[in-house]
Each structure stands twice: as structure tokens, then as C-alpha cells.
Amino acid sequence: MKRRSFVRNATLATAAIGFNSFQNFTPKAGQNVKLAIIGVGLRGQAHLDNALRRADTDVVAICDIDERMLGMATDLIKKSGKKMPQVFKGDVYAYKKLLEQKNIDTVLIATPWEWHTPMIIDCLRAGIKYVATEVVVGITLEDHWAVVREAEKQNAHVTMLENACYFQDVLAILNMVRAGVFGEIIHLQAGYQHDLRGVKFNNGIDPYDSGVEFGEKGFSEARWRTNHSVHRNGDLYPTHGLGPIATMIDINHGNRFLSLSSFATKTRGLHDYIVKKGGANHPNAKVEFKLGDIVTTHIKCANGETILLQHDTNLPRPYSLGYRVQGTNGLWMQINKGIYVDGVSPKHHEWDDQQPWLDKYNHPLWKRWATKYNEKAAGHGGIDFFVLHGFIEAVKRGVSPKMDVYDAAAWSAVTPLSEKSIELGYETVEFPDFTNGQWMYRKPKFAVDDEF
Ligand SMILES: NC(=O)c1ccc[n+]([C@@H]2O[C@H](COP(=O)([O-])OP(=O)(O)OC[C@H]3O[C@@H](n4cnc5c(N)ncnc54)[C@H](O)[C@@H]3O)[C@@H](O)[C@H]2O)c1
Image (cartoon, rainbow, N blue to C red):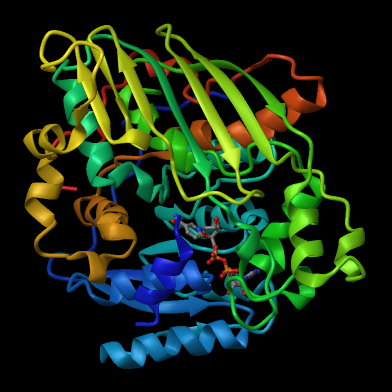
């Protein structure tokens, strides 16, 4: 998502055992949800900030390995006037000490990708019944299976904090899809199309657009994310694009991903950036990046739809998730802010301005909550409020989060599957069914009312 706007705001194959058998945990009546956050870097601080604004949530513990990030996080807490949580730090396994505490109801993980699977699994084994992870679930396909299996074994819930599912336009379109405005859905497109060059590299002090260092010499995402561009070639960040459109075609809730094939372009953008900004003699100009500048993935779904997904983070370009939702009656294309509905749009072959449609179909969640938590407070145009709200409300009610472990695994597994497809010469690879056949019976539950 757009980090600059965040900074502005922050400175302030297995047996699926019983979908209904997940143990319900509800905090004692009248008690707040006791939340721990592992990873209070720039994203963790956004969640912390939102959690501190909630009257029903107490942040009881935080953990990080970076003193500067911990300082920024504790500043936020002091400013909020809330009680200082216990702080766990010192080494990369300090979070295990946090998990020994008895006063924690739920854990939110906002660490680098490679830490998500081990941390989720350790939370579950420590008896935490609600775990929220930032995108993505893990690195390998086996990571994804391990998380699903452990959640089932422990009768616990894992949600992935896919905030893009709550964009106001996305939710209005979901409403339109469910109302049948576009007819039967045939094809969808989306992508993570975000020039991250100024995020993948910095000067080790300022997070954005400040230099060409990464790894140990970088700060925030430049410290870890860039290494994935050195060593991996696939759609490394699929879920902001895929999550929202998966909800529109009921993936894991009456439909499923069947197979995918991915293609990668040549790799130029990151090297080019280093040379232009740091000079041809900068040591990083010798680094060979593996990640294709644009990775394109095609997914086939059980109900006959196709999805075209792109990952485009190495070249200059304005930000766009580029959603397109197309059915037998018409389509939405986010990039040109246009909607066309056959027989309803006044002019044949001409786009309607999307806004009147989006207003008409404004989702009940936005109608109910948008005024209370304005853009400034909620981050990312409001969606950061919704994603935390969804998680906390599920905890309070002792019910499954609206985006559950099967959704998390399916959306996020595109990364290892796309890497495999590219490695095999763009072969089509099968998509595993994390639900073990239950996708046929599960009913849609995401954004079905105005509650959470
Ligand atoms: N949904 C969104 O809009 C959005 C936006 C930005 C980032 N993210 C995701 O959030 C996650 C974190 O990204 P970020 O931008 O905050 O990165 P970041 O580098 O700013 O923060 C990561 C933090 O984790 C800490 N950390 C690393 N290893 C640790 C360990 N073993 N124990 C405890 N702390 C550890 C780091 O010190 C750092 O403070 C990633 O998964 C990223 O993809 C999501």
C-alpha cells in the first residue's frame, strides 16, 4: 500500500477437521481484548496507532528487535495516554518470551515475510486462539500448509490482515456483484502495481526515496524486502490485488482457484535505479536481481472465471491496483474510473463515470463506520480501521474472522506457486485446495452485513 500516506498518519493437503469446530474464545464480559503486537516497524505502528484508538482493546505487549522502531512505538503509546505495555526485545526470538505471558488474548504479527510462518505457528502452539498476520502467510507452499494444519490442530483462528478488501470502491463493487449488476462474472484483473524502488532502497535512516542501500545498511523494508527481489522471481505480493477479487467470486466459499501460470519479464528496474541514483560505481550496482520487473499470473477458477494478476514494483509508475471486474452484463475498470452496464449505461460503447454507481451501492460497512473513523485516523483511506476492526470484533464475539485461514493460505500461496511456474518455464501448476473439499459447502461470509 502507499507508504507515504502511512508515514503521514503514523507519525502521529490434509484433513480439514471441522470448519465449525474451531474453539470459540470470548474475552470475559466487560473486559477489553488484550492484544500483543510482534513487529512494531512502520506497519506495526499503524496497527498500534489504530489499536490505541479503540476503547475495546488494550495493547498489553509489544516486541521488536530494532530500538529505533521500539522508540517510535513507545512514543505513540505515550501520546495516546494509554498504559505502557510490556516490551520484549533483545534478539530475534524475544517474541517467544512474549508468548509465555498469560494475559494475552490475541497476537498481531507485522514482521518481515520470512518470520510470519514461524511466528504464527509459535503463537498457535502457545495457545493463542486468534492470530492476525500481515500479508503474506509464508514463503514456501509448505509454510502455507503448516499454518492451515496448525490452526486446525489447535482449533484456533488465523486471519491475514488484507486491508485492500475494505477499499470503499472495492466494497461497493462487491455489493454490485452480489446484486447481479454485472451479470455472471467471467474475468477479473488486479495487481500490485506500485513503484517500490524508493522503498526497496534508502539511506538507512529515512525510509523513502533517500538512497540506494539495502540489507544491513537499509532501514525498514529496505532491510529485508529487497533481499526477496535478489533471490526470488514470482509474484511476491499478490494479496492486495487478489484478496478483493477473490471475495467477489466466492473463492473458498463456493469456488476455488484451480491452477495458475506465471510469466516474468527481464530484470532491469532495480539496477537502473541504483545506477541513476547512486552511480555506476556504487557497490550495489553489482548486485544481480532475480525478480522480473513485471510478473504476470493467470489463474483459472473452478466456476470458470479467469484472473489476470500482475506484480510490478521495479519500474517508475503511478500507484494502481488496477482492478477490473467483468461479467455478462458489464464491467468495472478502476484505472479509468469507469463502469459500463449493458442496457443501463446511457451510451452504447461509452463508459459511465463510476462515482454515481459507487455512491448508489456504497457498502453497509462504509455507511455505518466511515463517519466515526475518518481517513486521517484510520490510515490508507480508512481501510486500516476496517481490517483491525474486523479482527477485534471477531475476537470479541468468539467467531471466525471474516477472512479466515483458508482465505489467507489460498490468496498468499500465489507467491510460491508463481515462483514454481516461472522456474518450470511458465508451466501451469495446480493450486492446492487448502479446504480439502469444503470450498463447495462454505457460504460467503466476508462483508455480508454492516457489523465487521
Ligand atoms: N497491508 C498493508 O497495507 C501493508 C503496508 C506495509 C507493510 N505491510 C506488511 O507488513 C509487514 C511489515 O512491514 P513493515 O513495512 O512494517 O516493515 P518494517 O521493516 O518497517 O517493520 C518490520 C519490523 O519487524 C521487526 N522484526 C524483524 N524481525 C523480528 C523478530 N524476529 N522479532 C521481532 N521483530 C522483528 C523489525 O525490526 C521491524 O521493526 C510485511 O509483511 C509487509 O508486507 C502491509
